[in-house]
Image 1: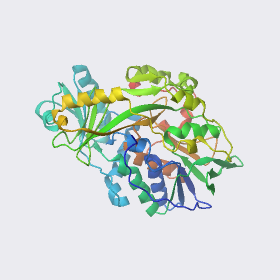
Image 2: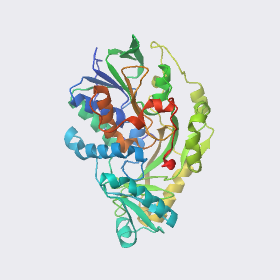
Image 3: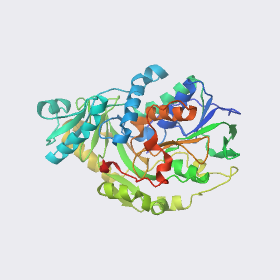
Image 4: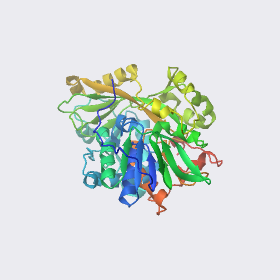
Length: 443
């Protein structure tokens, strides 16, 4: 079954000869960057090998959350929320954004204490995040049958509709002057005198002074062809949506066996709150040493399997000439199959927790490829060894909510404006300069 139904985005048929910046990738990061740059008066061409938002940007849970993030992401997430609050007015497009709150449920005293400690990270930002229990908890999760000690509640957290957001932001960028080119894979960078001077697409060359690589799960492959080492792996998350049903929580909630979000169509998006699947591929072994700290921290939540992806990725070209067909043209959209056992388990757990869901049916299911870095925070960075190239990738399952903030930061880096937040923690060079790579559990 194909992924979510996307709002269509018009494409510009003619490539510009020259722009200030080319953005590679039409997900939430790429479209947000294009919008910000275009509104600042730069000429921008956004190139997407498939359709706008067709991969993980439309396949995620739709959460826009501050809660339970890596503390290093909190300042950027605060900036992202400010962007979300005005995005519909700014673009004239529907986003489905609403601040309905998110709850992370705590079935035990240990979980309660863990979330209570995390909430302290928001103290300096004057953002409310607190533990709730009893009647207040029951009112936010009407009809639930969970046995809980309490829950972490962050009222400013919310939701948006993934199938609307990236397309809507792309339309906003186009209205601001950017050109949008779908079905147009960028094959390689054009490098002259040691710096970026343009890109070569399957439809021709575009000259430019800056390129933003926002290719999601494809970024490592593209960067590698340019001689840039970008440690990034892919994990699979399975999601489903239900038919509309009366009742159920307006706030989104995470529990040990499932996560739930109310949708604009009256149904719910449901996913597994704990497990992700990792297909064993050659990169798992190439990057094993760099990912060891993350593997130790997340071992219990990962499910490894040997699938046909080993053959697919082992057979993919890792370098090519601009005149050659690339892997980006051979696979326009990553569309992995949902993991049936995880889907059945999370659906059963959600119905036990909210009996009202027994009146609903599964309308659709899909899976998405999440781009993950060794420390599970993104790369938002210039490439020091190649002037003119900037990377925004590796959002590790946190990219949808933080995307508009990342777009602002990337635009700041491209234009040389004072950055909206300190980008130091997101620099690409942290993986090569001897810095200790620290997953969130170390904070």
